[in-house]
Length: 125
Image (cartoon, rainbow, N blue to C red; front, side, top):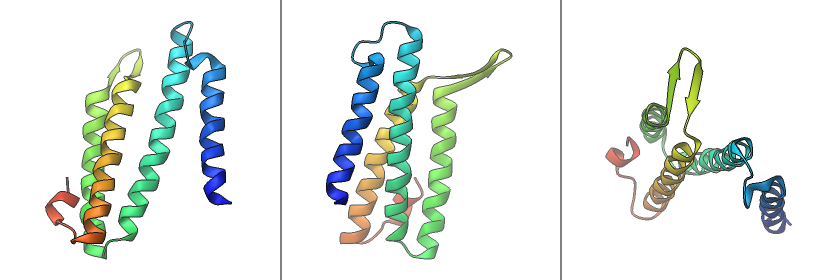
């Protein structure tokens, strides 16, 4: 049942975004909505992948992974956002792209750690 529920959930998510005009946004507000929706999904995927990797690690390795993840978050935020007197500005496409790259990195760490063993230096990246 869970295998069916996930694709249906993703399909529902995609249909909601499409119905909101994400197939062809009409204006800047539609684009912001669509981009934020895509980023929110990528962020959920990132957290799930991080948890999967963390579960495969020993406590010392988990600490190294956490340190690397926090450093990466700071780098992503510095690269994709800025603060001005008028408020915070976030480039959602930048944040989504970097988050997708990080998910791929974490998937590779999971494969590595469950097959040949973790490389601590990579966990800390």
